[in-house]
Length: 127
Image (cartoon, rainbow, N blue to C red):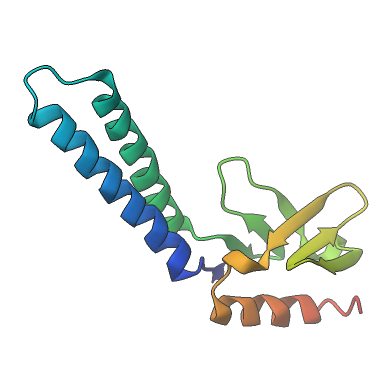
């Protein structure tokens, strides 16, 4: 099961990507001698748009086969059976095992997905 980002988070990245793309294209194609910052705007645009498409495809978290994993390039993975403690602090869930801990920012998660996450965590009966 994939736990999705809020649509607002995704849309912000898309909007910023489009805005930077417009600035970059205007800077490159409307002047005879484009300034280096125009190319910088295009790079920033590519970064925002890449982030948008990556997050839209992979979403925030995945819970499969007894593992919960963050869908980042170097995201953490934790076996659900190894979780010893769940700490809820300032809108975050901190899942602790003997060796590692995984912090989940609940403010990034869609409401429906947050309900699914709470259901999965309640199944662990950690109190």
